[in-house]
Length: 622
Image 1 (cartoon, one colour):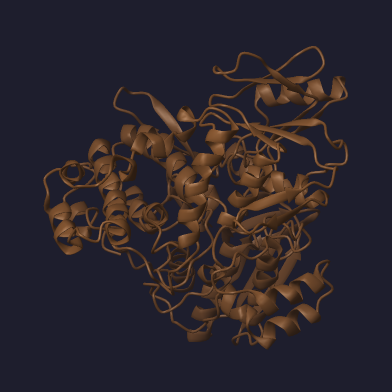
Image 2 (cartoon, rainbow, N blue to C red):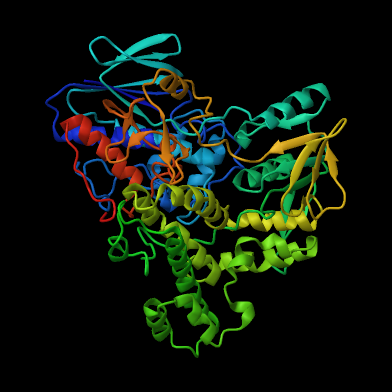
């Protein structure tokens, strides 16, 4: 049997690992697997040649591609391996790096010599780990197994006359009995506004950087000291700021007061940044959690969720209330331990989890107003910040709390709740217990961007650096509801709170490309849709209108792609980012010790291919 995996990033390697494990278990049938990607193994996001300044936002011990004992799956537990941090401590890691001619070879050797389990590794080093993982998995291939690796772009797939697949990769056409799509992030077609900005920049000797990966950007046209507008203050914003400051020779120094200051290189531009929310992503705290450690839901328990079904859906209002209760439970538990030792913590926790309205219980406690969790201020902090002094005053306690750690800092521990509840939200998504209306208006449009803002941020060091850059007048954060337009010869940025506009000849879109199969530039996905071999996932609202979720339509229980009339292909699977919104938070790399959904999906696909069967599980039970 011939299998082709399109995409050699974490998910492609994970599913290959599960196919290998199944073949080791039963090698009676010959198997040829072709792993193909436009980029070297690791894929685009984890390129080993990208700037070493770009770091991950997940601790090294929480990254793997190996299925461990926590993963509930049908397949054999044969191929296990270390997480990124554990791998870095081995002589194997050092030897592997020395055997390859990496651009950052010396830096990589330094990384593995000093990387701690709670450190945030350079993205390029994770690319090296992925390459080693593939080499390790395939060092001793099972009988009747052949692996072919190809660096090429798959542009077309079609059905052959015998019902199998024909793939066109660059100039070559190849057959496949089974096809697994693990394509990662791709660029999107420009919006009319973005097309206008591109044409404007071309006509006026300006610089427009569209939505793309920061590590791909050429900054040579940006002059020292000139103003640069950055639209978006999420993860890509931190990357751009790093490349335009440290990347141009600026340095940070920690003073006796513990704060960072910035020493300019005189080569960085003046950065003007903003967004609709008007405040950058919150910092990730110092990790204190060990292997597999997660907070257990107190309200969104399996018993609670078992009350709901597609016929008796979970109302969005109730879900939101339960989520806020989960966050508040952790926050006040840490706060009482930290600042209110006179309060009895076990009594508080019992009363909170059994109260009809737990959030109202807080009003009865002797907790100072300034210590109480203000949801509006937490989620929209910039609304109350007037200028640089206010911004620094808000950042300082965030930084201090984050540095205390994910099990100690009250706010940081509370925000970690969003990460630990991701599997619960995935289960809710896949069980279909939200109405299509609530799925769109609450989960996709409200909750997902909110949890990104609060819990998908950069390591705290990046926020410390941002604070120093704001204090040094290198970065200016403009108020919420940032608007960008073009004037006669420049880009102009304004906000409702601004009485005047700021202008620049440089505009950078610091937003990651949209995860949307309807506007992707991925030639294979576009061809699948155009040929009706696949179609975008669509939901019907109560008023009769329909909306696209941005995902490629699949059967979520088997990961099989649905054709234009909704029928699943029996030999075409999609896994990961192109299924975002059918599944949820698919862009995350697998995490060890937590029964990771990515690793379960990898085995689920491998099981179907290798046995023709699938072990169906209730998503609210796993």
